[in-house]
Image 1 (tube, helix red, strand yellow):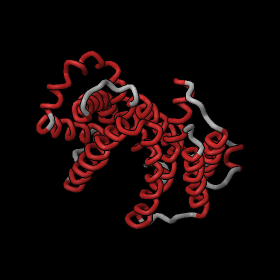
Image 2: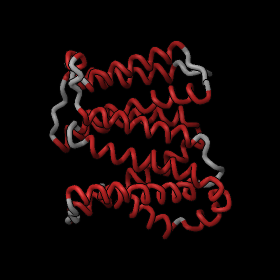
Image 3: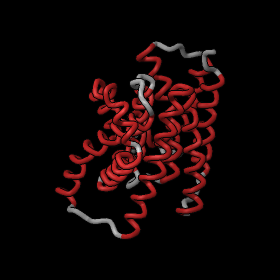
Length: 261
């Protein structure tokens, strides 16, 4: 939780230093949507990050990456539930195929675990995190008409503020452990790459092509995560993970091919 807080503090400082003119220009509009934007920052950033890191204690980096392939499915189901967007038969088939892949990962390739409900808690945390990020993605389609940098500054502030209770809970239970040199390098990389550059790019992409099409690119996360987990963490890539990855990506491909024109 210290990493959650520090990543958004660093991002917020950078934005206030280099993008404050966007915030000043957009503030008259943003202040009328503070509750909505604040909830988006809390759900999409803080809740997602906290569950993501909690999941990493009891599941592999490969599993975390593959399970993120469920985000486009949650987006598809969410837009149908909230806005009654039409789902074609091919999209429904894609959802089913993706869910089979998720079940294979959650069961560790042993479907008998499902009968005894013996599922890795880390995988469940990751699925809940994906649900939260999908909610955030759908919310971006209703974002106020402001610049990506102005919106992201308020989202980052909300993420930082909402992370403080989690940090306080962590400190009260496990004590405070200041990051060393390696820890600060991790904080810097996490703040600059997935927190700043990736999020601004995603916000801008949703404004250009919509949450559905933008969400499809999340399918690259399982691919990148699997490669990096094997190369950098020396994790073994099991056969059931290969099957699950193929099903998750194949299911999303079906959903994209079968989308309503």
